Image (cartoon, rainbow over all chains, first blue to last red; front, side, top):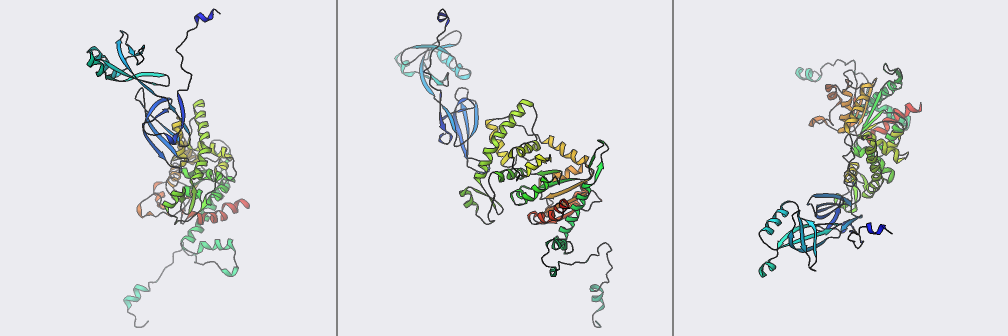
Length: 162
Length: 348
C-alpha cells in the first residue's frame, strides 16, 4: 500500500480514440486525414479510376497541421483511412515566463501554463506583440495528443476596454 | 522478229548469264498429294517472298538446335556444356496472344537458355493464370470499352477486373520482397523478381513458372513499364524501400553471352527486346545464328525495323552468319516454325 504515495497521477484523457475511420472515397479537400501517422489537412486529392494499375486509388497530398510539412499517400478508394479529431480553442495570453512557457486563460477562466512559445516567425511575432503591450488571443490546435499554438490575433475587444 | 529494231532487241533480249549460288527453282505445293500439312510447310521454302524466308528461318533455327545438342568441353570448368546458347526475345502482345502456349512449351522443355521480354510480357502471363484474356475485335470503340472497364490489345480484350485480381495477388508478394531485402540486404533485380513471381504463381500454364523451375533466367530491364510497375509504384507509398537493380541483370545477361560456345538469337518483335539481345551478343563479337520475326520497316532508321545486316555492321551478328528476317506477324508464323524445329527435334 506504500506504493500509492509514489504513484504519479497524470491528467487523464477520456480514453476515447484520437481518430475515427472513414472510407477513402468520402474524404474531401480541406478535410483532415492521418497521413503516415501525422494529422494532416488535405490540400490536394485526385482519383485514378480502375485500370491496369488495379483498383481505383485516391492520391492525397496534405500538410501536417502542426509542422506544415507536406505528406502524401495513396490508398485504394474502398479502404478506410483514419481521420483525426481536431479541436480549436482560443486562449487569452496572460504572461510569458522566462523559460518560454505561455500563461493562457481559457473561456472558463482557468489558467494553463503547459504550452511553450511556438517556433519560428509565429513565436517571434507573439513575443513582439506582447512586449508592445498588445492583448493577444492564441488559437490552440489540439489533435492526436498534441497541442500547439498555431495562430495569434489581437484581442481588440479587450484592448478597447483598456 | 525480222522487223524488230536492233536497239530494242539488244535492250530487251539481253543474254543472261546464270548466278551459280542462286539456282533453286520456284515451286509451290503439289495438292495432288492431298492435305499433307508437313509437306505443305516444307514447300514454303521454294515458294518465294516471305514463304521462302519462313523456310530459311526454319533452317537457321534447326542449325541452332543442332549446335546446341552438341556437347563441348568447357576449358574453365572442365565440364561438358551445350554447344550453343539460344536467346529468345518477344514483345508483350505475344504473351497476350495464344503464342504464350507455344512459348511456354519451349521453356517447359528447356529448349531455350534465356528470355528477354518487356513488363507486359511478364505480367500478362501471370494474369492469364488468374483470369482469361478474351477474343475481341480491332474495331471496338475506345470510348465504349473505357466505359465498360475493358482494355483492348489489338483484337484481344483484358477486363480491368483481371488487373484488380493481379493487384490482389501481387501486393502481399511485394511486401515479402521488401522484407527479404531489408533483412538480408539482398537487392532484387528484374530476373529475381520474375523468378520469385514464377515460383509463387505455382501454375503449370505459366511460362515463368517453368522458367523458374528450369532455372532459365528472364531478363526485363524495363520491368516497371507496365502494370507490374504500376503495382510497385502504388505499393511504394504504403511500404517504401523496394529496390530493383537493372545493372545486376545486365552483368548476368552479358556474361551468359560471353561464355556461350556459340549463340543463336530468336527475336519476335522489335523495340527493347530486340536491341537488348543483340547488344548482349556484341559482347562476344556477334551471334552465330539469328532469326528476326517482325513487321518493322527500315526506312525510318529505327532499330526495330533494321535488317540483320545492320546488326552485322555493329558486330552484333557475326560476318560469317546467315541471319534471316521474316517479315510477318509472329502469331501466324512462330507456331508453324516451332512445329518444324523445336517440336520435331524434341519428338525425335
